[in-house]
Image (cartoon, rainbow, N blue to C red; front, side):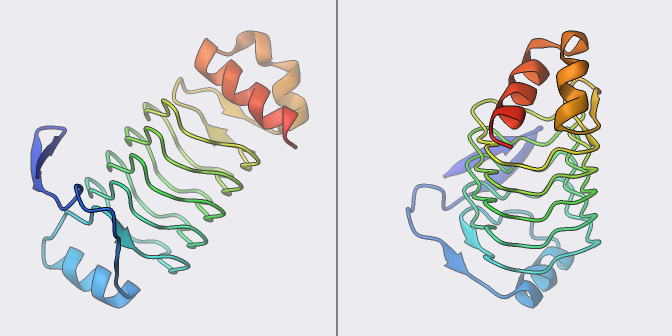
Length: 167
């Protein structure tokens, strides 16, 4: 299946319902060799700290429980990815496609989501402390986000409401 994201074409196995399990080392080697399409890859509980993965296609990827501290995922395609319980502390997700991504209980503390598309994303129980939201608003904590809710745009208001209801 041919996919396009930000004008970059990807050949994808997205029509398959199974995921391909690979090691962190194999993944990084393939990425370093220039491969960008990792649709439906299984990287559960991988440790990928301080890695530049900008523009990568991780459509439908299994990244639950992974540690992705300070990873650069700017303009990456993470639509329908499973990031349940992932640690994305200080990750750069600016301009990322997170449509229908599962971010339940993910740690996004200090992450940059400026310009990211979170349509349909599940942020239930996610830690958003210090996170820069798509509109540029920084959430300092669940209590202070209650106090500044009137200053948020509708998307950040909704995310803030979900965050404070579930914490």
